Length: 112
Image (cartoon, rainbow, N blue to C red; front, side, top):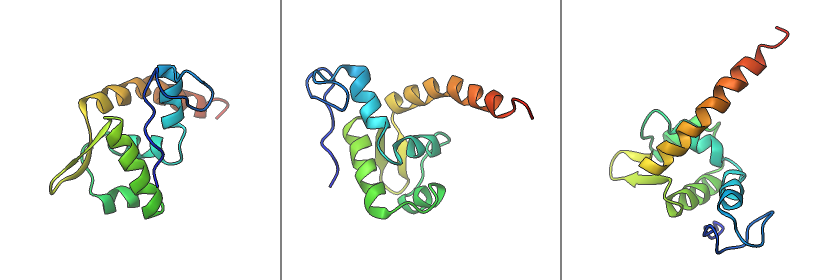
């Protein structure tokens, strides 16, 4: 069963009794498979099956729980016939990951 979505500023989350927005976001993103799901949806919609495959065959139960949480948070939406995709808010979040992605690429090449 998915954890209830944190309401930034109103719901206590890991690391914050007040549910500060950044802490609520970090709590959501820190859940198993959440970041990977967002990453895999970066190029467009994926069906549930394609998303599971892209996520190294993650458990269907965990995937559905995470997708439910991401939908409740307004970051992912389900399109009839097309599968899951990032919402405009989810795409904005994905854009904020790109500098981290570029850093990770540079970091991985250090000393190579």
